[in-house]
Length: 453
Image (cartoon, rainbow, N blue to C red; front, side):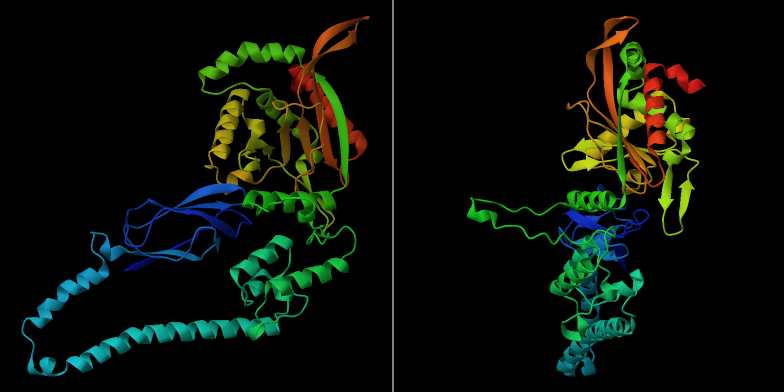
């Protein structure tokens, strides 16, 4: 029996994944849960296991392919699980018939070969006919589709190569609205780019981000250059940040927290957390305090629905924490942060960061953040203005703390000051609310007991 191994459902709103590495070849024996390939989707790498035992009959993808959910990637022959392929089993059965051939069998060798050849060609003809029918069906749907339709299912039936579909997704073009110039109205890259350029020229300010039509100069005239394709993470980041910057009216708020006493607390209790297998960091403490702040200021734990002109308030507190990896910036999500202790948050934060850096993090572990913390203090800098990552409405930037002279009770005293910046969506958060939120957080850092009142 031939078992199809397809790309399974990955996470909400994730429809494709890129093949990073294929770990098996045709003819290899595999068992249940053996890894067939390494995949990457929406910033996360994951493994594709086999759910059956058998022999790899066919590998239908190659490294670098973008695969859609439900697409067949491998064919596994489960009847060959004992080490024999189906062809080998058939060859062992043939001598039984040839031991005592009848007169008719002996006299019709050529006819038998002809029948066998026709039987092999028949499925191929049927497959070809089915493919042509499917393509014709796709053409019909393309012709029937209204010009301003934006239905994802209709787009999936538009005749186009995987590379063209990938290009359309990357620059935000709905294939169901593109008229193909090729045979049977097949859509080409040129068709997609022409449609995007036309739509961009007629797009009002503030619309969804489309292709960047800025004409670059020929840099090679000035010296040697080299071009390098964006990897999956960089393309996703570019699209997401471009969309957020274009559609979210940002306001930036700055403040400093006196963390002198907090540093003493962190050092005193670090050993307690280390015994549990984690490290007590400023980020872990910020996670706990920010969770309380989001409950105190619910508008920062919300999302904007401009289509229905509504504000969506969330009763759960999920906070993303930016992690610097060799593949780029990843943002694992700590769920229900308001219900966990600082020790629990430290352990989970350490685990998530390690999974992100070792390419073991799952796509759904990077989704669902209501708010984000980005701490660059370990690298340096005095302040920065992070971009809000939709559908969240705010993000906290943390820079490096340093000792500064602060005027207290008539004299200057050395205090450890932590600079923080808050970026927020001005559509639902006013400046006064932004200032109150950040000041509350600074006071909580100076005196954690404030969170109890």
